[in-house]
Image 1 (cartoon, rainbow, N blue to C red):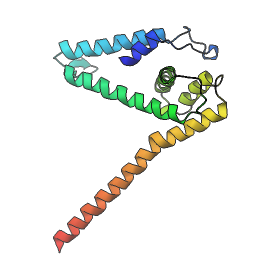
Image 2: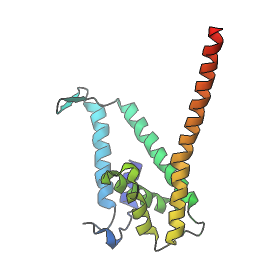
Image 3: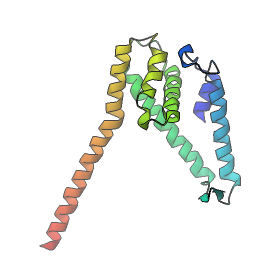
Image 4: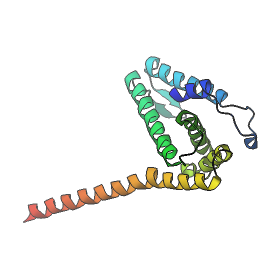
Length: 177
């Protein structure tokens, strides 16, 4: 919901190279806000499962819906903060302005159906920021971002899984003795 307000109150100007039917992100913000309000209203009023093409869908409680929105918002805020931190220090953007660019790029990546938005995400950020920062610096920052935000947690999880498996295996061996 917070991102809807960001696109409505501080609309990002789209580059003309994108050839979109609107010049700012304000219409996307309105659509997002309507979707979030619909989701929250559904969690309040729809207690019976929805049946769509033979599949049953049940809205979570209002508290869980709010928690989902809060957690996902924090995830996107922190992810954008990681990339913003990795950009060159002379980038003439505030974090709030960059957050709008980041969210637009993530939206484009999700809509494109490309796994991880790979390429689409980078292209949108590059198109918007290339007039303010060198393309090489942006690409280097995005490569570091992919490493920090995706591969570092993967390596940490693999290490923890290995530790758990070794510990569990040792416990199993000592029980047999």
